[in-house]
Image (tube, rainbow, N blue to C red; front, side, top):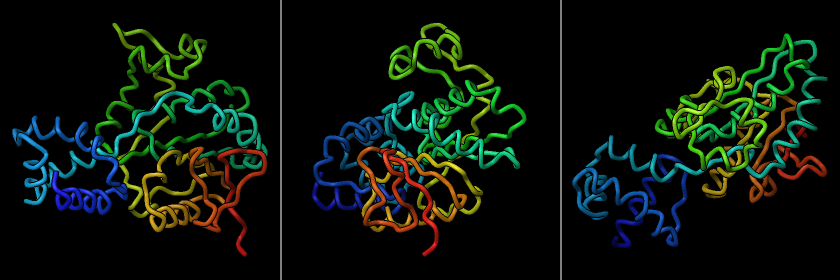
Length: 271
């Protein structure tokens, strides 16, 4: 791929998704886009770029989906989910005792493992949450991964990555060589296609947001804009989970780190 074509692809991805494609990601472009080029009969990445330059909108959507799809697995990194269970959920149960309502957003839900992990934690607290209305929204820019998330069907390899065996036995049922998550867990999560570059207002307000391993793909100005819009859409005492390699420091004064809780940030009071 010529430097000009790579720059065109980079500009296209940033405009459509916020993804910053650096020059060292040539292997990623090849592995994800060559199959699309061949499927479309375009022969090569050069043919693919030529079609994109011709404003093939369906192809553009397919390319953006392919480049922005990231792997996910159940209870990824463990610490955020332990923190949610031991620290954030008790806080919500105390502070929302009157309204008995909690809204949670998984802002890069991919194939559903993150929101379903949260749903299983909440299902395990069924007695404490009796009479409560708990909503989990999972969003992603890719309609393809959301279709998989809604189906709740996972391979043996996927359920072996991070999912405790007791939860597999309790909340999954074997279907051939795959595992289907229980209907009551699937019903706890609603999915919606959404681009983090868009306006958040239509999503409503959230008590907790998981936006993990997403900001690392954006440039600094885009990170700052996303963080500020997240803050606008959260409760005054809302909690934000970021990935281990992500931070709000130097990007936004709308959040501040929670002491001794790695990856957890709280909405900062107005100055």
